[in-house]
Structure formats: C-alpha cells, structure tokens
Length: 383
Picture 1 (cartoon, rainbow, N blue to C red):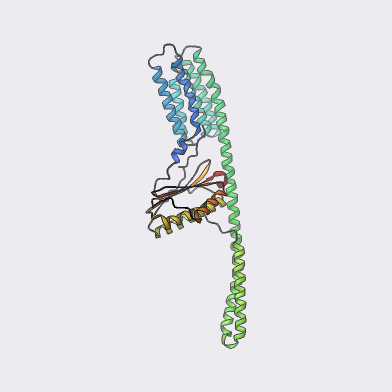
Picture 2: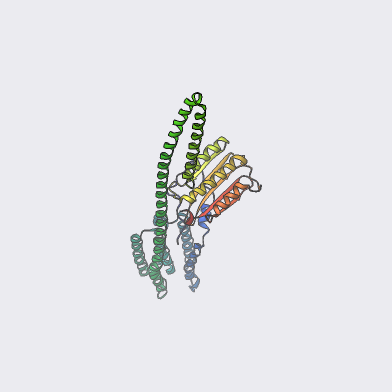
C-alpha cells in the first residue's frame, strides 16, 4: 500500500496560483489499485450463501465502496501520519461494524494494518497490529455468521495483519533510510561546495589584491613619466598591461569549473526578465526541496533557457513555473499562455534536451495555444 510522497507539506508558494496539472492524476494512476481485489472476499459471502438475507448484498457493496474511497484517500495523501484519521481508524471501525454480519469484512483489518505499517513509526505501527488483532478476535465472538464459516473469515486475517503489516513496515524503514542517505549525500555535497567557494574567495582576494595594487602603482608612475620620460612611460604601460593580463588569466583559471547557478537565483532572474516583457510570473516551488548541485545547476540552466524563449517568442501574458518532487522523479514545468505552435526547436532547446539527458531525464514540449515544457529527472540523479 505504499504511495507517492505527500508534496503539500513544507511547500512555499512564491505567488499564489494553482500548481501544474497532473499531480493528482499521477498519484491515482498506480498499479497499487490491484490490492482492492481482496474486496471480492466481502462479496463472496452473499454470493455463496444459498438464501442470503435482503441486507447482505447492500451491506457487502457498501463495505466495498467505502473501502475503495478510503483507499483512494490513502493514495492521494501519501505516506503521512494523517492516515491514522483518513485510513487506519475508518477502516478499523468499518471492519468492526461489518464483520459480525459479513465475516469476510475482516479483510479491512488487513488494509488498516498495511496503512499503519506504511505510514507510522515502528512502535506505533506495532501497537496498531496488536489492537487490530484484538479487534478481529472480538468480532468473531459477536459474529452472527454460523460456524465453521465464521472461522474462515477470522483465522486468515489473524495472521495476515502481522505478515502484511510487518512487510509494509520494513518497506517504510527502507524508504526512510534511502531518503536519509540522499539527504546526507546532499548535505555533504553542500558543505563541500561551501568550502570550495570560501577557498576560491580567499584566492581571489589575495590574487586581485596583489595584482591590482601593482597595476595602480604602475598607472600612477606612468602618469608621472608621460612628459618627463615617454620611453620609460611606454615600458611601464606595457608592464602594467602584462600584469593585468596575468591577473585576468589567473582569475579565469581560479573560477573555471566552479561557477554554478541555482533554482532560486534563476527564479529571481526570470521574474525580472518576464516583468520587462510584460509577462506575469506565477511560481509554485518547494523551498525545502534539496537537490544535488549538479542537478540544480542543470535545471537552473534549463529554466533560464525556457524563460528566455517565453520572453522572446511566446507573446504571453502569464507564465507559470512549478517545481516538485516525489519518490520517483523531480519535475520542472514552465507553462505560458502565448501563441504556442509547432515550430522546429532551436539550438537552445536542443542543448537543453542534451543537458537533461545526461541526468537520465526527459524533456516534453506540448501545446498549440500556449506552450508547456515539462522537464523530468529521476530522483536518484537529483537528490
């Protein structure tokens, strides 16, 4: 019952606007819907009962529909402690109310155990497993279903609550460890980048302090010698030029391979560029999203290229930029309401595709009335 991560927590919206479409649809389009097939056991009781009571079919159908709704809420909300009130408790209550009349409704205790193992800390999840086991035992005592059919619905959940619950708990721990490892890697890279920037700042200070002081002194001397000794003044000017060129070469060699860009810097630049073109910018950006410096650099350059195209060619009035992430990918979307079209891509977009491809990502361009550029990068390469 693992689900897509909840992206709503901790998201800073720089300009109030709807996020790029598709996020809800992506959470619903998942193979995990197949687990709802276990609800067929709930329908099996009235189906195989020779003379079912009038209420048995409506009860079984109602249980299946309500469980499907709770399951959908679990998929939409993702792995979160909020599942206690949106999935675990409602499923446990529904199972407790329905099982005395439909013994196979005890399958809801298994769904609740899976949700607990998937979203709660280990200690809290185990307590839920114990409680659901006890609840399963109580319902068998008050059940109206005759023996031995009552036991057929009671015994399997008694074991599966723990088997499924512990498997989901293990998966939860594994995902958490992977997330922690990505976070540690990002922090190490960030600290290394900060240290390198501090070193370069010190080198530039020492280098330029010496070189520029020499240039200033020779410039003053040259000014004094222009009339008194033109030949020496010319020699001093040549030496000053040589010093300046050496300093320029040293600066270039110091910063080569270091200059990086980041998303927030590019968003600020995009706002200035688009404002100059009369385009309103709306941004949906998770401020707590930590990306590897290489991935952020490439996405920043991609954002710069896309915004430049909007400003130059789109004739748009509104541009929407969205950046979000889940367990599988990081997605950057740039959408405008301009003229769109299917004109051939220029060298800028071609280079953008090549840059994103190096990260294992994809670039998709769509739209006839307006253009949407969707850049997707695997989470392993970005976080």
